[in-house]
Image (cartoon, rainbow, N blue to C red):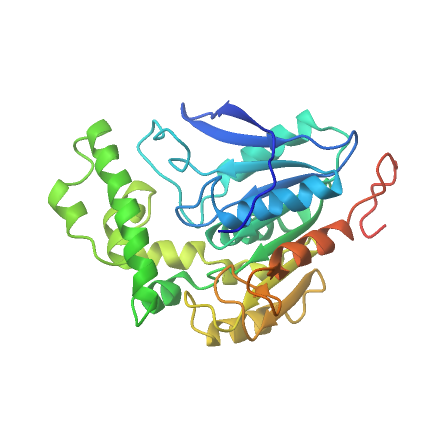
Length: 312
């Protein structure tokens, strides 16, 4: 029911080195304006409410923006024997390098939501001190920092409603992938999947080189990478997030306490990528989008400035 500003987006289909493609949707802003790169969550797309809200933030600020759709999350199934997952950072790296060449004078900002936030933090943590100075600021929202605990938590109580929706969508894609690669897995195995852990054991892990779901969770969870982040980054999460046990945020606090690049904001309420406020339900405010926009705006140069030093 939320009204949306009309946005003029341009699709770019970017060929990848492994013979696949990525769909990028571009919003044009002012000359020399910052470029905001947006990463969606599990089974998200250009239609996700938070993606459109963050695009509106970019639009009203005069920024350029690009939405990276993970493989299989656009209008076409990807070509290769793989999908996307929480620890897959090569597509983000390839996209960042491409955009840096297309926008040689723009400050780069990156915001990731849910799974996209996990990808973002892993990407920044992997690079550490070697991260591109072109990336001036980042924001990670409602991140499932511990993938194993998140997978188990979403299989409890009301959270199972969300899980069921994800599984149904993922099963459709897995069956379509089976048409491309009949030896991938059996139809019966796909149809028997009931939980995220089932899906990751049956599809994510074998397709992407992991031993099993636990190996995938161990290697890909953002919590093991946050200590190495060297870009000013907002970590925004809610304690009542139905996708993550609250104690995980306490572990994140411990991991992040000695890292001055991390700016933690863990609110009591907000749910999962919700953060809806205001006293009138017919005129709500959207705290997450405003907060991410304000935080990132504080980490860019004035348009046209030649000063690239961090913090100026």
